[in-house]
Length: 155
Image (tube, rainbow, N blue to C red):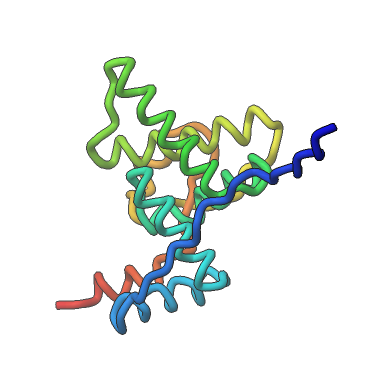
């Protein structure tokens, strides 16, 4: 009789290592501190946002979506990316602002409503309130403007 084969656990991706250098390291550290995340988790989230055609402005909004979906931030990013791709395939690409951000906001609102969950009272700080008011449900806001306010304050 042949020996029993070892049960193999699902193969994990190899770790990704990088030396960010002082500038990128500072930016990542600042983001991690502001978001209350360990540096590695902050990097994962920033990478997920970037690879799904979003950026740090959407972090809190996608975080709420992830919570509503069960906690997987990357899965929430892919959910938004799929909705954007679906709109493009339907002949309604969402490439320009503010239409794109309002669409992302609607994707999150729709998921909350489909789960019967209360929508957090937030606004996307980078969109005018009047534009957000045209959407159904409450407006959204990222709690991330601290870093971006520094950028706007520059001459």
